[in-house]
Image (cartoon, rainbow over all chains, first blue to last red; front, top):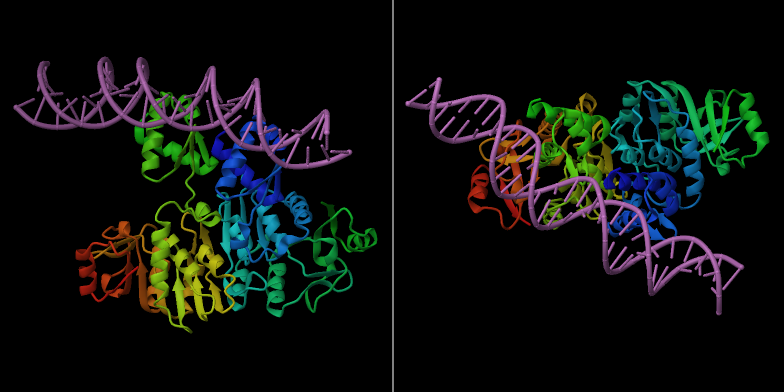
Amino acid sequence: MLTEERHQLIRDQLAADGKVLAGELASRFGVSEDTVRRDLRELAKAGQLRRVYGGAIASAPFAAASVGQRSGHAVEEKARLAKAAVGLLVAGQSLFIDGGTTNEAIARAIPRDMDLTIATNSLGVASALADRRLVELIVLGGRYVPDLGTCVGADTLAAVAQLDADLFFLGSCGLDVARGVTAFDSAEAEVKRAMVKNSAGIVIAVTNDKLATAAPYRVAGTDAIRHLVVEKTAPAATLADFQSRGAQIHFA
Amino acid sequence: MLTEERHQLIRDQLAADGKVLAGELASRFGVSEDTVRRDLRELAKAGQLRRVYGGAIASAPFAAASVGQRSGHAVEEKARLAKAAVGLLVAGQSLFIDGGTTNEAIARAIPRDMDLTIATNSLGVASALADRRLVELIVLGGRYVPDLGTCVGADTLAAVAQLDADLFFLGSCGLDVARGVTAFDSAEAEVKRAMVKNSAGIVIAVTNDKLATAAPYRVAGTDAIRHLVVEKTAPAATLADFQSRGAQIHFA
DNA sequence: GCATGTTTTGCCTGTTCATGCAAGAAACGG
DNA sequence: CCGTTTCTTGCATGAACAGGCAAAACATGC
């Protein structure tokens, strides 16, 4: 195990989970805690993490790469959702991933040794995947909307139309059994619909606060959802409704 | 076992695994570790890998640049160049900006209160501009190339073809009076040429080490350069050559 | 064929680097 | 306040390293 390799794995876990524990890393790498502490000290000196008692937490390197750090709350929840969502992946698949902080967390959680073809219109997702050597990354360009962190418009639609994916990780603004998947923005909804059309299956990962809410623009019906990744604390009644409409439920 | 043969196998494993171990290579090739170390040293000198204690890992030019901006050397120089280059901008203009660390520095240096329309195929540039509310940002999508940090290919070319810009900030790999602007990669050069075609003027900002060097693929002739931003210490003779071919010289 | 020069390679030498251990300091939790 | 955990520092050890050297393989010129 190379020193630099450990550093990279620490950065990965930091990106995926937001935190690392010194003792846990030591046993995972098969080295002494002293060595891990030295690693953490060096990475902290380089500004790549913030050292805390017992381990380290992500400093704000994603504020630059990603939209904003509004992902302040529920960051651990999203990391858990992301980990569960990534469990659905199979090597060699092709994916659509659109915008949203949850989808960015999923992108960061994708293991480095998995070869995939991924098309995204989200700058945050693209940045997170930029150094995955085994990922064939296709950026879906277009007019960039700062509030969404994604590209939309005719160019984006045209690019989506040329592709087909096994799975679509749909960043959901609202999710309701009756109304289905909904979005706040017209152009955004249009892109999502195009991705739905060209995908064999749809995956939605949501925190509890998005369940049973709706936004103005319809994206897809409830029947279209194949996988639904939710927190363990999600209301059972709502989940049963989705399940009866064909969705497979996965608990983070 | 030929030397060049070993080099190729090392490159192969590096592309597949992302890392190599000196000892492991030695036993696999049936040569001494010293020989392997010599191989690694040479490949590192050629920039094809990054040497680390115990072996080597795949060089990641953009990964390092995006995380921190310790993009190695000449950070201050590039910031100075960027500041000078931004001085050429006029509010309301539309721009092409392609890849490279210098162009990322320029993107970061663009004032927040200036309204512009900017089209870029560089993830780094796009990320830097993502929070500029007054910038109409157009992402030029396509196949993402990790080594370049930019999108290339047919999709990118099609997107460029739809746009016209006042200025094109051309990230130059090589710059030579006789050969003009040149690039290392065929697909990259193609995109650059498309941008040149649809721009009213070209701006090139380079550090001294890029002056009087050339890469295999031609992008544009020397005559096409309208603005050349250089360090104060740039060799006067070379600058005079560019000036006589129509370029306006700006010192950082 | 023979002599000469170059390249490649392995070995040797001192040096640097990564790691784990030990001891003291600091931080945490009651 | 004290005990425990975590952290830093210094140090010793072994692995990895660069440079020098010589033998072997190869090419070149006469």
